[in-house]
Length: 90
Image (tube, rainbow, N blue to C red; front, side, top):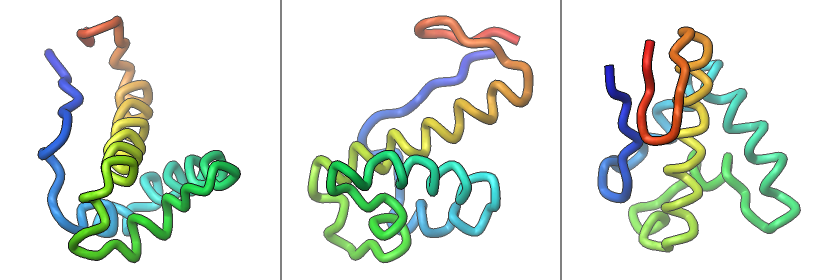
């Protein structure tokens, strides 16, 4: 089985907002938000209150994508999928 973390362009408008309805996703994002706040990045606000042009800012776009991937990787570990660089194996 291969699990590929996509790059730019795989997301859709309001994806983060939609995923925030899931408890496990919201909790992960809130932890990331707390870590990023000292650097002036407000992840929860960015995802929940995003506008059409929010993710045209490259920093917002990358931070949003990485936050979703961090949550995805947590799921992989919970499902006992071990990862090695560039590939995963069950």
